[in-house]
Length: 260
Image (cartoon, rainbow, N blue to C red; front, side):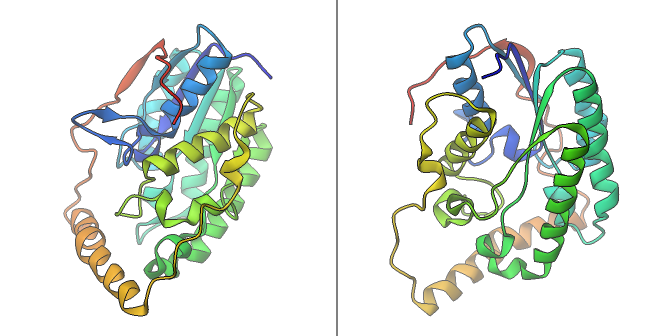
């Protein structure tokens, strides 16, 4: 296993940790959980998280890359593009261009870079079926860009937890605490960290199938409670990240928590 001393995470709400905690108690998220695993194997590790919810890939590139480079990471995670992908004017080539520029700069500075591919969106939110082909194409572009720069692309498509409802918050845009924990395990496994429980690759215990009326009610509730407000914010040019800054902008030691 490669020893790491400075881990910097950049990205949007998933990397910030939305869905795992809240603004009152603080957000944890898969990147924080990964940092804890790294610190357990690398005493003295320092960690910074520059991610801010709502950011598009171009904003992550413009706002977070230079601060990340100044911290001289030997490990960096770059996960962005989902906010772009959900928008009507999505241009895959432009978004991948931002990701690839970040891959190139960070690997050129000597960092091991990790990114994550996205799961089948229809299995998470059936009403998002029109976006399915877009997600598959975007993943293929991520893999190709990662390969060009020696970036480790962690696969989630086909891994059972990534499309299990229990891995997602009610909004279906952000991972639940369980989902963040399993995503951290997936990245830790890809990095070759010791003592990673292989259960992250296995299906969660089966649930009884919902009745058709329950499925319909769930979709209607999701549309009214989450999809509608999200679309309304986009129309108004608003973002959930307006006025927010990084939760952990400087490198600092990691506090180890009890495993959960």
